[in-house]
Image (cartoon, rainbow, N blue to C red; front, side):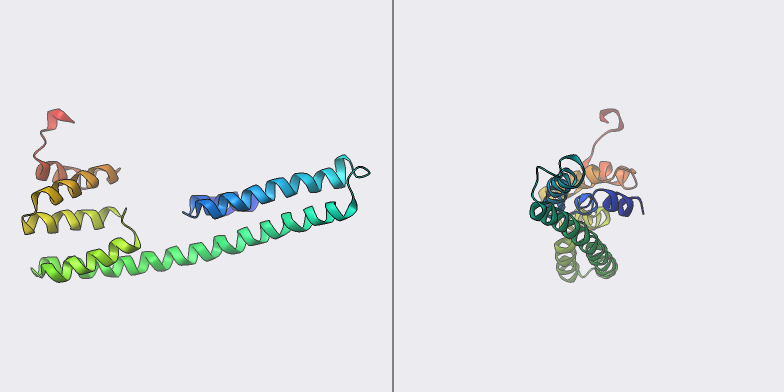
Length: 170
């Protein structure tokens, strides 16, 4: 809700927060420049700036605002679909890993990583899979990544145990 309000006031900022950085930046830039030109033409110096330029600036800033709102909602819908598909892929890979089907778990985790490779549980499952397959270097990399992503420290103790890190070193 807060991100939506930010996007209303500063078009494009919501897109930046929702992982569409360049698109959000460009819309914010267009809105800012055209909005300033429109204000100058309407309020600050209406006699110095031609009407066509003021009209163009108003139209461009309005277009940037509308596009920003539409693309923001489209991005929210897209992220929700990704979240749903990621949940299904993770559940299936969890079941495959529990059943000992490493090949299937590997394929499912690759598909999930294509959706969001920064998801904490995805990285935990990858680390567990690498550990159970005996791939020590990949497991070490994955567990270190888990520690980086685990801001709530949910899997921190498991990752530290897998890495063999003592409590005193943290």
